[in-house]
Image (cartoon, rainbow, N blue to C red; front, side):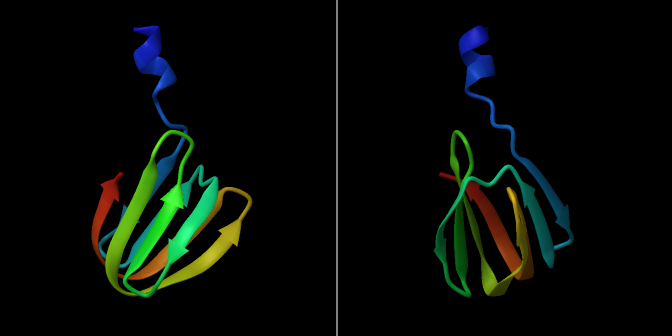
Length: 75
């Protein structure tokens, strides 16, 4: 059980419909285009796909993404 607990991420993700995503626990911005944003969380990467994606806020380990969000995927 401890090995499973070690694999957990500290990330917190909040969605507001398909227009806003708030991600807390972001370590690194890996890539950023208007159709895809890839964030490195502590144990996985998070891929946000959509259209006209814009990073609205970036502070410490928190990020807000606005636009038309189609999917979130752990990679």
